Image (cartoon, rainbow, N blue to C red; front, side, top):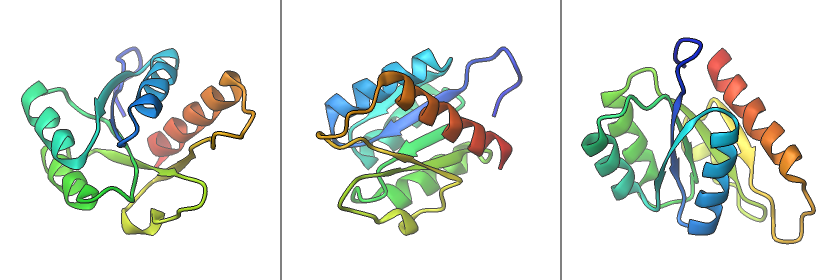
Length: 130
């Protein structure tokens, strides 16, 4: 992660636009700059085109091509840390080298924004310590 005072850049790779927006908002509240990508191809393209030094990638490990995409992005940013999104009912987390996990709330889960924000901050702290 970056030096104190500099906002970390977090790449979000997930195919659910609503979830990506929601997570981006939580990341902004946690002091990060979020970069959304709806698929693996977009993630690689955005990392290359924007030229932002990406610190963390929060990804759905079940997305097609995400393992190769993370390998390509980490080639540009060797200190990149990965957080895997756990989705209820699916658990392909073992397919990527994640330093932490973040559970995606299901539609029926009654989690407060504060609980979710705490989870995001804890995951970011876990990857910073790794």
